[in-house]
Image (cartoon, rainbow, N blue to C red; front, side, top):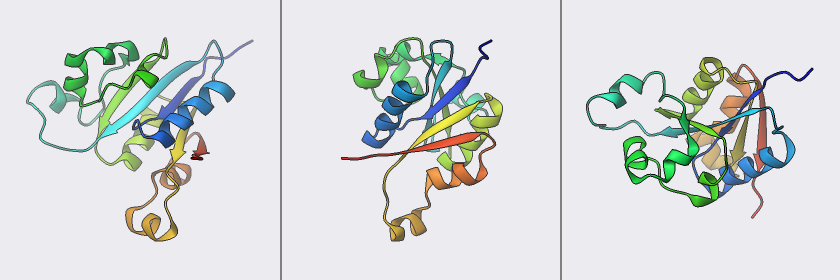
Amino acid sequence: MATERRIGVAIDFSSSSKSALKWAMENVIRKEDHLILITIQPEGNYEKGEMQLWEGIGSPFVPLIEFSDPATMKKYGVKHDPEVVEIVEVLMKVYWGDPREKLCEAIDSIPLSCIIVGNRGLGKLKRAIMGSVSNYVVNNGSCAVTVVKHHE
């Protein structure tokens, strides 16, 4: 008997996050799974109204295909990426704030069975200064975390 799984993939539309998405599609996602892309936007001065409501809990689930609409992209601050948007039957949730904290919040609030994140391959010095999102999620996330290393 198949159980319903919610698989999250953290995506910022960088080459490493797209590699993680591709890896997840090829190695993890099953037909009956729910794939949820999670993107984190920086905190900023958003228009009054909906954004203020969602800042703490993230946006509602949005079908990924809707992100080909310019109004939707502007509303959520997400750029059009045909390489990602053409994936069918995928939902996306937008959070605002620190990616490390918001990804861990998403794990619990959605809730996710597992999450897949990319690795930018920061050197030791940059990782020490900036902090590694993937390392933080591995150590603080409450579900299984897979880090996909990006190879150029």
